[in-house]
Image (tube, rainbow, N blue to C red; front, side, top):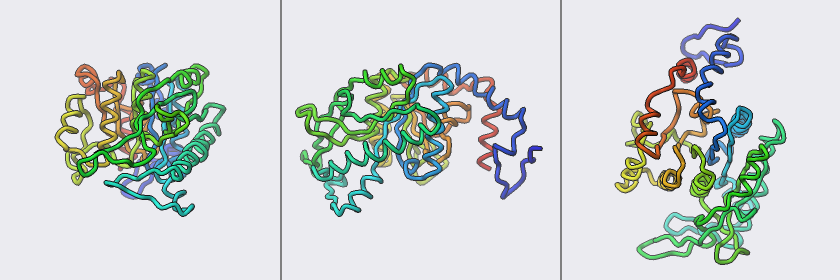
Length: 335
């Protein structure tokens, strides 16, 4: 028999503390969302602590398989900052920084390529494929998926060479489209050939790569995983989390410099995706197990969502009539 919810110190276990009828109600509660997202492409930028914590990695893989099995088309784009830094240190390759940005030398780029395509991608593909032959790994080099231009950021008032770092300037999503059509889950590493020299490979920001791919695929959503709950009006005040923003409000926050520095590339990527035709963009906390499912399939939602149009904003602030039980369940899990 299911255990009654207790007070402080009680750990709620969904496997043992939900009755069979409550589990059925959770599934029914998700039905409106499953109907809405059926057949839709969802691009997920996989990053942050979710990439290094073993339990969170398994949870993420389960979420990808679940979404695929219920009729959505998830696409994963990943970076690998922590893993790259660890490997560079292990190999004794010193990192140089200019204006807070890592300079990617040819020697370092070899490590970036090796870690992203040979370690991070293979591990994630393996975790997903533990549930069946679903995932296929590829990089921005494969099938000319991405083409990038070398970036020279303005540091101390002048363009500065930071090595083999670039921005995605074009996308040929045909290889990813083929995998989606075959029922696979594409797992994309964020490296890309230089548009001026296809034999040169550049390290590209995974947030911006995910945004560019989401736009090229006509994705319904771009979801960026990070280590915080979303955007805050005041980062020091955790009660100031912003749940909903229009595209205009998002751009205004960026223009006014009201964003924590680490969030700027993520916000820029969300704006790029929305302007490219993606319906909604999300920033959510990947350190919460199954946060993707909480965002997609419950009224409670998590994180910050940015809307491409005023109509999208209005529709999202009015919950589905069935979305009650799962929201209450999420609240109970947090207590």
